[in-house]
Amino acid sequence: MSFNPQPDRGLRRKVDRQSLPAPLGYLRIRGLLKRPPRAEWVSICCPSHNGGDEKNPSMRVNLVDGHFKCLACGVSGGDLIALHRLLTGVSFVAAVRELGARFQ
Image (cartoon, rainbow, N blue to C red):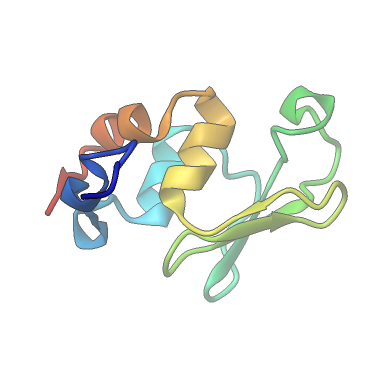
């Protein structure tokens, strides 16, 4: 018998990514759009530097799945949950709950 320091590790639930809000709607509700979207991408002010107070938006957000990258400071993330965490500073579980997503 081996010792398992994290007995619930196999019981973790996955996030139902389909239950996340659409990135464009999320950005509109939060008032982050300074310019209209271009196809699948939109530019917003990066919250990681200058407190989000930039003259020209430097962060690109994909409107299909929400992944993002700042072209000025390099901060990036893979989905809308990561963007929400960057903007608010909350934990992963709190971000999922605040976004109204479901666990599988």
